[in-house]
Length: 226
Image (cartoon, rainbow, N blue to C red; front, side, top):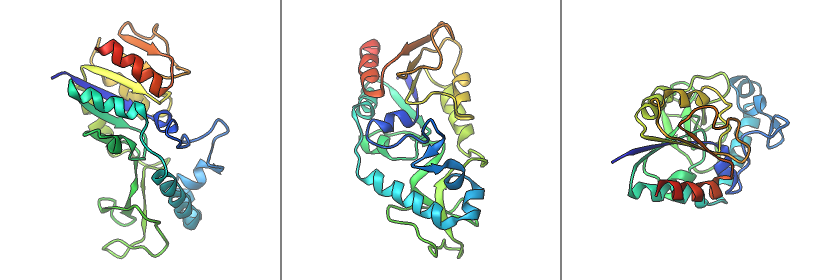
């Protein structure tokens, strides 16, 4: 069975009603991203950070996967599909995707501030005083600016084994995630779905650009793959 690797980003979640990671002015839900998505922000005001992610968790519970998520699941009828996502939501999983790797963490998990290997499923609010089994404060299981991306090597391994590469909902401008395209094998067909694509087909002969949003772009792609 041929293997499709999907690199997904905030654009696919935005079509379900979730805000993209940050707006053009650099703000995320009205906050400077460094206040709510960096170790320094956590150090300066952990209560603000906890409240911010509690609000994101509540928002996530109010939205559903969209047609783009569901069409990716349909591809599993004919292909092995591995999704490497920059998104911290669970919309791919809720749509039914079986293999999802989260590069930047997961909103519905928390982890120990003492030992980052201690992670816990978490759907309710996370509060000051919620502790891990070692007695340390729990924090959002999110990869913040300035932190290592622990799943990067696994993502590289997955991408390098692709027979087809689909890039959807991401501008491919955020590193190190944007570097994953470079690990696809030479001449592997690459499909780039984005309403404002940052690259065009002069980038590589094996690149097909679909300048549409995620849902319409996935519908077009299904026709190309059939």
